[in-house]
Amino acid sequence: MKQFLIKGAKVVNEGKIQQQDVLIRGGFIHQIEANLNPQSNYTEINAEGLHLLPGLIDDQVHFRQPGLTHKANIYTESKAAVAGGVTSFMEMPNTKPPTFTQKLLEEKYAAAQITSLANFSFFMGVGNDNQEEWLQTNPNAVCGLKIFMGSSTGNLLVDKQLALEEVFANSPCLIATHCEFEPRVKARMQAFREKYGEDMPIDFHAQIRDVEACYQSSSMAVELAKKNNTRLHILHISTAKELELFTNDIPLKDKKITAEACVHHLWFDGEDYERLGTKIKCNPAIKYGEKDAILQGVLNDKLDVICTDHAPHTAEEKNNNYWNAPSGLPLVQHSLQILLQMHQQGKISLEKIVEKTSHAVAECFQVKNRGYIREGYFADLVLVNLNQSQTVASDNLHYKCKWSPFEGYAFNSKISHTFVNGHLVYHNGRFDECMNGQRLQFCRI
Image (cartoon, rainbow, N blue to C red):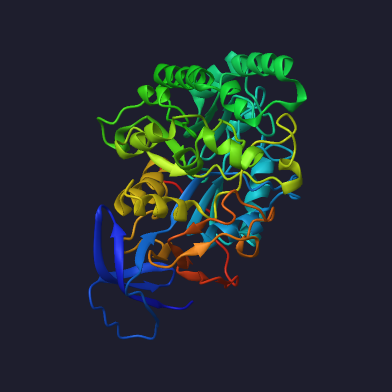
């Protein structure tokens, strides 16, 4: 395995930006210091003018394998991920069939072992009737359990109160929830269909899956977690009202209830439906006038991490009317560039970006030896150039679906190098696929 010396980078790590050298040896960060001169063979990378960040850990993606591989698969989406500086991902169970058994879960891990360019973990799905399966989940080898407390793509809704009570009382590890109150969503869906018919405008999606639907479900999850002292992580917060449910007055390591923001809820607003239509239809919905509050929740630490909820569909599937277009959009290749653009707009610091996309994800999920630039940690690293623009175009997209809501947009930054476990997997548009990522491990017991 090659040794690398990253020379003269501006290292963004643990609340500081310092010009340092980083020596990578045997897949790990071996030494961090200014003006290193190691006495061994290595490949030197001149990183002057570049920023070095820990690789992003995306705790919510949908890579569609098995059963939905006409949209995406582990190989294509992990390739897009590393091109965007995402070195580890945690993937959701709404595949076909859904990941409701330990056998199906391990089949996913086996597939990733031979195809994923990034490090990986997979959520075990919770259904109404699979308690004997999710109880067997190994907390040190699996990122968590996933509960759909609101139907979304795949419709794995858990709507039996007894099933919810059982999982919150007995979960062997972290529970991640999709929160939208299903009875309210269904009632509003029916009312809007009756009023507007088949040609309903897309922007009413924000009224069907509205603030109250999100709050009712999130508050129920928080109540169940508090009652049972459960480790709860609520996914993709999309409303200011939900921020009332979370605290920022204790350290992250002591929180039992955490939550996250997604890049599309930080970037897009309801006004963007007019321009992008069903391309930005997602669950929970992009709403009007909420993104500034969500950003403030990130900045004041009520929201603990930032992820993507990367959820690709084919262009043909998305190019339908409101009722027939599926929810979800591809994001994992551009999440870091979105956040770097927000940084250059003066909205968020580089230190906070690193905290929310790497450090805090590792802390929330208790990921072993990742998420920081520290000696002895895995060398999951990304070099970025904040002074080189890149326009998103179909010929530089690596998603299998080959479209993006950002096509034609020019980011003011570019990902130059991505290391996964010390392997330079991506360099200025070129990939070295001779090594795959590794299964994430967790320090929970």
